[in-house]
Amino acid sequence: MSYCVHCGVELDPSLKKCPLCNTPVLDPNNIPCFEAASPYPSRRGKVEPARKKDAAIFVSVLLLTISITCGILNWLVFARAPWSLLVIGFCVVLWVICIPFIFCQKLSPYLAVLLDGLAISFYLYLISRLTGSTDWLFYLGLPIAFLFTALFELFMLFTLKVNHSFFAVTLYIFSLISLSCIGIELLCRNFLKDPLRLTWSAIVLTVCVVFIIAIVTILLLPRVREEARRRLHF
Image 1 (tube, helix red, strand yellow):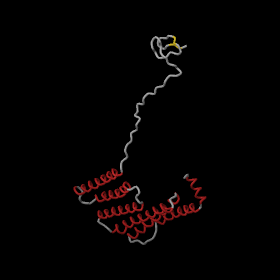
Image 2 (cartoon, helix red, strand yellow):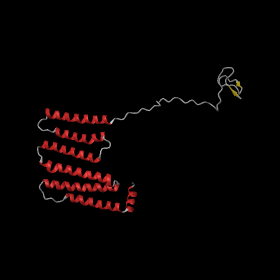
Image 3 (tube, rainbow, N blue to C red):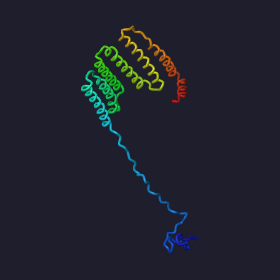
Image 4 (cartoon, one colour):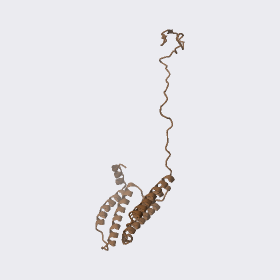
């Protein structure tokens, strides 16, 4: 038997409303559930990503502004030495490094390394203009820049065309370090008119050769290679 929740009169089971006060009769076992509206918007906002053109314009304008500002400041206030060439050259190097990758996602890595080497060579030329000496530029600065450019070109070639596994890349890195140190010491000794022999670079070469032999052994022995991979967790 059910009763009205408002006036307490006894109700027939077939009634939907109380005959006295018209209060709706609700079944406690079948109460409708009304979900409240969410206070948060259902549509998610999305920030439009920056376009490559906008990013390239921003980087170019920023570096150009820095170069022009330093050039004007050097010309008007500190005119005794062209120190602004260092800042301008650094901005040129950054522009050469950043802009090609912003515009060209499929830029050849060989071309990218070559452009970086040319930008660094131009920066060294500006430094020579500031110092007033070109001997170190032609006999030390540019040869070292060309050496690193050639070595990085070889590194990219072996990494992309020969083998790009972890052990192979590690082998290339140790080889790159040893050849770089040998080239730097020989170029420095040639610039200083010293006998061409290896001293400190021989120590670096010895350490690198030990690692190179170990890595080559790992690469040649499949079981050792798999065990090294499991122990290094990759």
